[in-house]
Amino acid sequence: MKKLTRIHFLQILAIAVGTAIYGFGFVEFNMANHLAEGGVAGLSLIGHALLGIDPAYTQLLLNIPLLVIGYRFLGQRTFIYTIWGIVSLSIWMWIFQRLPFSVNVGHDNLIAALLAGVFAGVGIGFVFRFGGTTGGADIVAKLLQVKRGIAVGRTFFIFDACVMLLSLSYIDLRHMMYTLIASFVAAQVVNVVQSGGYTVRGMLIITTNHQEIAQAIIAETGRSATYLHGEGAYSGHAKEILYVVLNPGEIQEVKQILTELDPNAFTSIINVHEVLGDFTYPRSRYKVNKKVKK
Image (tube, rainbow, N blue to C red; front, side):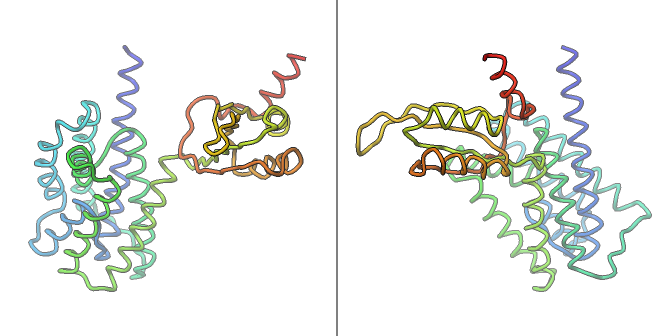
């Protein structure tokens, strides 16, 4: 029970750190350099520019009805972490606006956009990685996915596009272009932070020489392979399919193995966003086990 409590505490702490990073970038780069933003944060900037309302309050108030609507569609733990993400982000926004501190980028909007994207990406990625959200479009996307079967990515795109268009009411086209740069950078950084910067590839190999190729992969790369039983749709013949997960640098080693053992093997290389389990063991593990078995 103590272990679970400790894990929960660390997640709450991590979400607070993530919202602090995002809130700092939002105040110091978006607000200070007249850059817009997508989602509810973007709406809060519109309210600040046109009505003079503090984004810390707007961000919190706009999310309350969304939380009420999304309560049934979010898991209990996700709902709690979402509330904490929304509240902590508003708190950080309020604090950073009142600190006697500012980051001088020398009126260079490109640098401001890049830094805004990096801080938003790191902050949001950190929140996502530890099971939280900052509310807003996340809740709307989940609701529409459950109710209407609309893909989450499409909802994000439409929601952010509408907010960006509304933002033209207080910024010019030049600042909007810098905002798009910041959004692109943030999206890339979020992916890196969520995956821990650890990218892997998966290979599906259809071959008649599966046993020899599997042994060669184990011997040369130190990675194991899994047999998937398949059948050719046209021929009706049973086939063994090899599935192996590799570092990007190990792909070429396996390609060389296939060239030597079965040049006609059909191979598909796919991006793997996350791997759980015994992938990060030392490469020598299988080699050692193999020697012991001999």
